[in-house]
Length: 228
Image 1 (cartoon, helix red, strand yellow):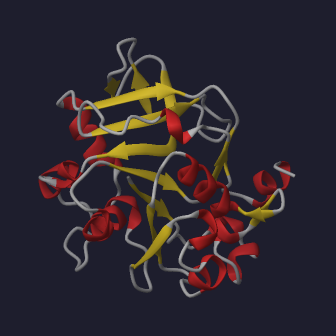
Image 2 (cartoon, one colour):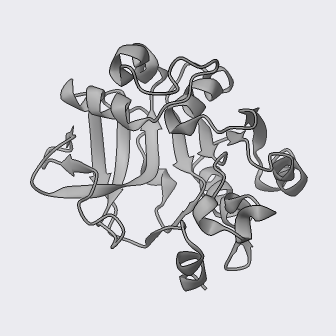
């Protein structure tokens, strides 16, 4: 199975730490944040990982090499000087990911979720891992029903963890899903993944699960320091 790690962001809320180091390469408990993901992906049977890059892109191959130390093959999907957002970045990386379902992980989260729990073949177009709403996102993102189906709106919404399994077919009609969003007209296009997920949810094509363990969106120096 293949996986994608989002690592292209500029990490502007983490300045000055990210002025010289990409956020996924900042150390957490003795090793770069992204290495926690690579280890868990390898444990889950992933053999190839695509890392999308933009800001300080040259540091990733220098720090991670080709993935030999984790028994992985790493590929780098460079997006240019401006990141393509999550949707545009995933679309740009699809040629490296093949035709089967793949895992995608935000490079700037830390958690104890076991990637071996993820379905290798989601029932629909995507399967998302949700967590309890943190203080910085009290209203949550999506609703998880008792049967595992996901809804874009609902009374009890949870926060998307940044971990999911996707089918390339999610992008089959991406232009109509995002409408006239700024960036869609660029080459390559720049857009967020959320509108595609909401469209797939309306069609009943997204499932999910709730992870009640540890999870942190490492978005500020304070959250990074809190991890120890």
